[in-house]
Length: 116
Length: 115
Image (cartoon, rainbow over all chains, first blue to last red; front, side):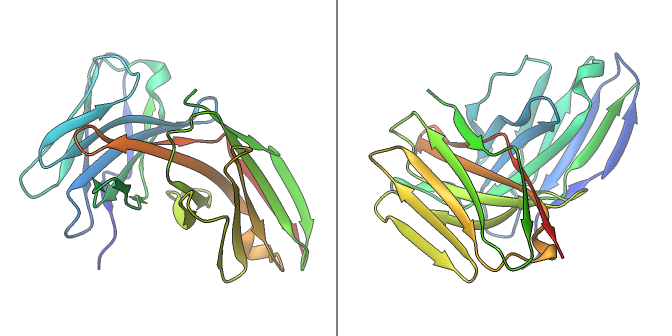
């Protein structure tokens, strides 16, 4: 099976702009989660989508949003970019949490966002 | 209560030695504990995972030890190799079917295996 793919891999944006990142999960996986990785804060959960519905959300401002399409592909959007948004944004694909069991999350290579 | 504490922050081991990384958690609702390996410029790769109904799980040179009463779990890398040099993250997860699940990560351990 193909792994998780993320596009673009690298992105440079200016403060105040907005950005959209894309994630294609492993075939058959209906859950897509997004994480932000920075040297200072480590890996932090942004949100999870399952069957086009946001089920879980981390502690990030409303400038961070996402959506999931019927084919399970997901996009993440950040509006009004700030310098502190520079990070590696990671997408993880999973079967989800079913019957009381959390299934494995597989990460993509990430999108490196630099805000200048 | 959602935190996962990981130690040490960095670890240097000689080739052939045993690398041990420890994690501790507070939230007793956590029910899934994976370990991830990350190389520079790459996303985290799932290494091995354990659920709290077992105390140990071994896959090749990698072993997770789990102590539910102490709320601690650790990763042991036997016969460490220079190719194991990477950053290792422990994580924990809980959730419900209606609200999904999220991974809470430890701070990471930078492992260097000297040849």
